[in-house]
Length: 386
Ligand code: PMP
Ligand code: GLN
Image (cartoon, rainbow, N blue to C red; front, side, top):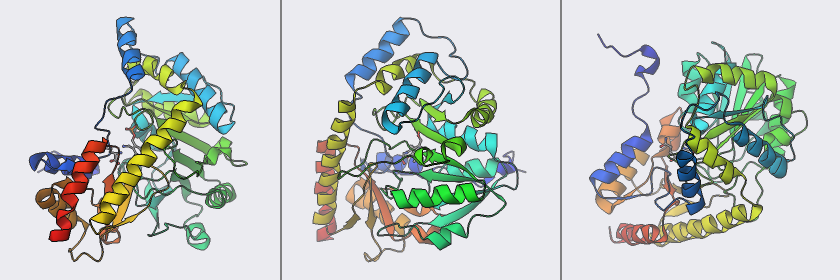
């Protein structure tokens, strides 16, 4: 008999851990798991060291350090024009991952349905399942990942409790446009459905496009949990400082789950996060330029290797159409690429409930040093010579 509980027995190991291990084993350039291979900003490191030296080393309040909640309220006002109460409407959590998990645990009852766009970020479905909820999938299809109004509307029913909207979207790089978010907002209100918006890539958007937050649409602030974190914007994926902004009743539900999951995140990193989220607009403008350049380097490298990238509008990922390369599926291609070519990518079938829907795609990350991208470009040329 297995000691493992049924609720986790079906989960396996995350594709990120699996591909990073394979990349390390074969000394492949890791364009799989999305983490920067360059130094975190100096001001972030100094702020963290200063917080530890100032002996901010004991538990933070369970809902997060007040200065950070205030700074997030200010940032949400600056970027989205929303006025939120830092005490009643903001919870600091252990990364966006805990924010998502605590939101689902706090709001979803057994038997409730939760609408998820696929390909999905890999923690959504396990969170829904652990809460006893039932995921219902809307499949985004390449190359434009567009949303069909009738098909989305058909997923809403009186059993639907929540919809999870990730924009900018990992792994497709799709940035949901105004009409799409308006549609989602209308459906949520018509069916009395709550929204969880995963906005961890809110500041990585290209080509003059704009990230729109669902909570800013009429009637949505009172039914939306807006989730973000430091990891992507400030190149510190290992810090795991995240937050959920939600009206008081929803924040109370999130808090109840959170207090018994972690109670609080790392206090000195929350203190250092105040410096991060208080950065002037200029910081974000530079971030866009920084990642636009890296995106273009990777797109060029992929094209010159004979691959077919789908240019992303946001995030630090590129999907590539591999359907005509003659591989059995995305897993076979990504394993070949990692072990034989020396470049690791993520097989996106892990992000679909029917893996075959991702079988013709591969995801590459470009949150890497230029020299890393250049070395990957060189190795990818081997695809040309076979
Ligand atoms: N959502 C998405 C779409 C992500 O890509 C990530 C990054 N891994 C997360 C959530 C988790 O963020 P965090 O590292 O802050 O937990
Ligand atoms: N968000 C990162 C990605 O999509 C990885 C997260 C993780 O390793 N759990 O690559």
